[in-house]
Image (cartoon, rainbow, N blue to C red; front, side, top):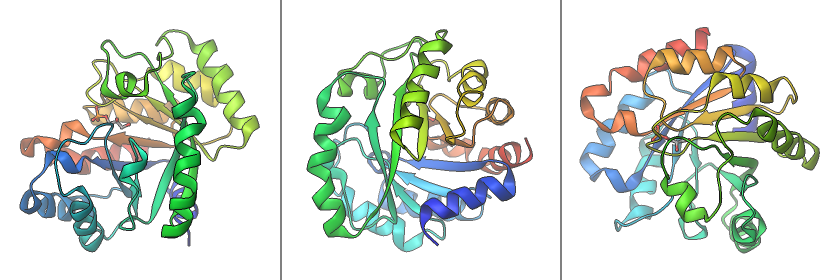
Length: 247
Ligand code: 1GP
């Protein structure tokens, strides 16, 4: 089964799925192993790996280790072409459609395509929409693009429809890692009432209650990153999985 099929099957059987984002820059290798083992048994449905900007060394090594330990599909969430790796099962093949920066709309994708083919990765085309979230996030800054205002549902809807008509497999509503405010359930509801393309929501989601509300509003997948980087919060993973699956 492809990773895309696994994700669709997750949505069909559980209502919605939970993806945990692992930023390899934030962990040393021993902590990382513990963390991946916890994710494996948390009830999560997949592991995303990546970040908008990498400072640390050994990222490929970290990805290799993650794939060795993970019992869930590992999906690259790339901030740039250099993060492409043979040590993932699939790649969210992102285009930042909320922006008008040609590099992030199509330039990087053209650079990446032969590499993806050469590595034999499964590309999952994903329309990435940055949503304003109370502060400038790294994704916003690095992509050199303006996010969609968080209260302008009609702009989000128009972008989502364009993504649908262009044939993207997923729409990703992204407040940005460390966002002050997550994407509103109202925006998720608005977007999902106009398109059947499954919607992934991430950025600034810190409680299972918020995750559950986003699923009730129509999200097919919810992503958490930062909140689990504090080891005191790792127990939250199971609560996130439960809230997302039952909502
Ligand atoms: C994934 O960028 C997000 O969409 C992750 O955001 O780190 O704020 O959870 P957080």
